[in-house]
Length: 450
Image (cartoon, rainbow, N blue to C red; front, side, top):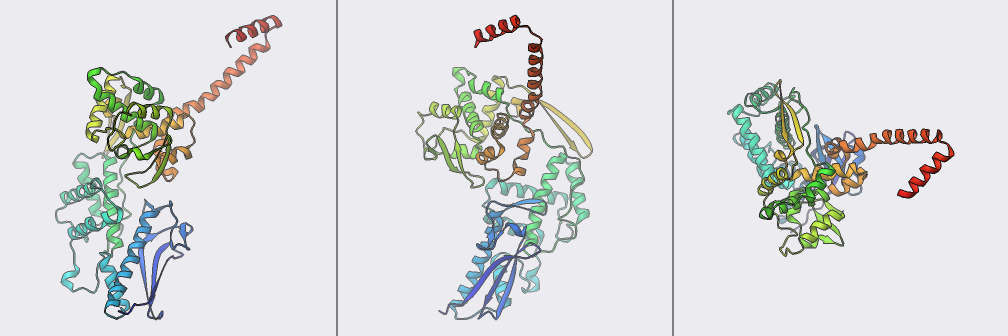
């Protein structure tokens, strides 16, 4: 076997396009591959030939993380290596066209030199390829796959004969109208279009031609941000200390699981996966289930109190955590009994019609409210956003912005400074008007209660 000598280099063009150049046969042959991403050149590490770690990139209106782009680069390099290895087994060297064709084939891209009858793929075929390849690229779970299947069913319900050629801007308007007719709220429609365009961007990166304006299309719908639900500090402490009846012990456990998440910022998936080995010297060290972020969280006294309460549990995990659905059901019952009945109003639109729903907090409480509670209470207590983000794993301000905007207790505490200053000014003004005897009386009174 003769080993083919070749070199690869990943780089970024001035336009920001991420490229991979391959040279072989004494540099006589050269091929350039576009990875399919355009980034800020300042976020490129030319030494490592990768996107700088922990950076976020705005691509077609969507946040793309460095790890996703770097994974795509590594996929290219792996496929290029496989092609040269296969040719080396036969003591031959690939031509430029052969390298392009085989690398694109291994990546699942469209092969331009295939026979005509094999060239044309239906939109359903492309979507099947997407569901086969994309989960491997992004390490998807079943929930993400379900969202894309749901999107595909909706697209086919709108037009059962949809094709890549007919999926144009007018068809996108038809899809908007279909969602409105089927009673979807505008916020959900907007979310579904993000999923549609995520699939179409993948198709574009893999060599399929899209109709003009499709990726830039935005539904012209009025959308009001959803009211983010969380427990205020006093509500959290009340819930933590509430005594449930002895025959409702399962509610006490559900409350404890919620409060532990609220004191640590954990998601349900991370709470359920916590092992005793993740607890080190009063801190949690673990990798998140959703994003694989490595987190180090110092436990406060409230979290430690819950840990001590469950020291009796000797399972493989740190806590006896019920299923997500059961825990959410128990939380609603527990929150209702504890009197968490603050009114929450959600305003939303369906098409051009405005709706307003009002309910009590316990009716909508879920596990994820605990994570929001951690962020909002931490900010209200004066903990810097950078410290909060180190606990939650948020990579930038934008991703945590929805939580920050609802921390109205923080605003109240800051605005109270005006009131404090007003009180101090009033006290000083009154003291200036006192005579010596009155000041002595005041001094003796303050000394007596100190």
